[in-house]
Length: 480
Image 1 (cartoon, rainbow, N blue to C red):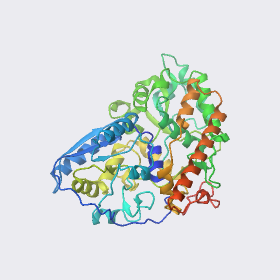
Image 2: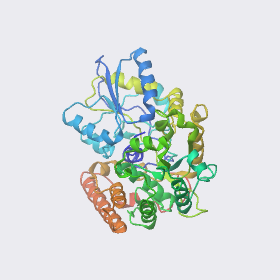
Image 3: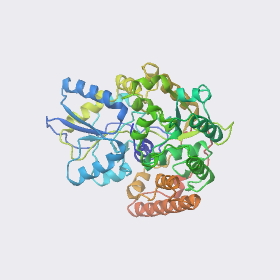
Image 4: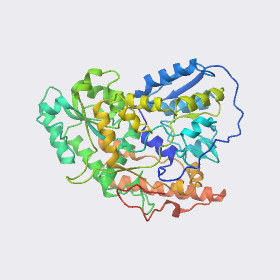
């Protein structure tokens, strides 16, 4: 897929929202008069596996009543944010876009004049009934996005080359599940020689790595998400689960099990190398087969998957996710908003599109029944089933108090971020892992306090108490 991390994007747009909340649903009520421009729509996104589906959908739309041609541009997530920034500066934003790489919360983008409300038609609104949540999809009474993907997913599944595992006498039907098992299997693969390494990764893509380490920290026992403990609302990047995950990754590097050059690889490059048989394992999200098999269809027979790794045997794989924010937005400068809203309403909220998403093997579609109806690879279907017992709905402050969106709009990006610290640890530039993570926790806490103060000064009714969920329980869906 090429996401920034898809997870980072979802965190920004959904503010880590909880699926358990009731939606504040309805028409967008944006009050904007749609343009009557009949020219083509420009569309940018970063969803690699969805490219054939998008092209097919746009071709259908061009022939539909009220439809127009769509000028479609796919960009790798590692390049998307910069492209959007440059387009904004030159007043050349596309009409519809995803937001990968910006790392800016949706409320802040709305405030800065990037986005405008959707005007979904009544049929689409009916299909999305119960799925639109205030503070996630709805801001100040207007709908800005809608979910397409299921929140039950994580970005660090253990994908592997079945053939290489068999050659190393590692059972692909019982792939390594713990840190020690993974190290042993990677070592066994590497001993086969012929330039084969145990593991390859996208170390040159810090945003993606940050998301993956967030997920792996949950599997290692972190009782929160995005560095925040659910029960107390405190930032705790410096806690043992994060430190243990990063130290494990660094130990693999020190053992020379990581494919040389990985420190500069994006996901696209790392995945393309992996399918050639240069490494046994690759950590990635559910979109891995959709991206990997696009140009390497013969690899389908070698593709296998296991869950996220855990520190010790017997530890259940655990992940937490909030409501999925929508991936597509109409920009403030869009010329033909009438056609854009028709396209989103009639072609992106229907079962055919969800089945298409499953066929493309991107993130699991919002309608999980579509997966069974799809022709997706068996490893993809296996992983989606695993998610059902491993990923739980998380509590989210913005669902309980929509004024949190005003805090998000005031929140500044922290650097170096988690992914930068992980990258630095793997390259040797960061030697004090816990100390660097403690600095990140402190900076994140200070930034949130500053944003709360700024938001309350402008009338928001919000406090630190809104981030505390003392009734949260591990491995359960939080009902909010």
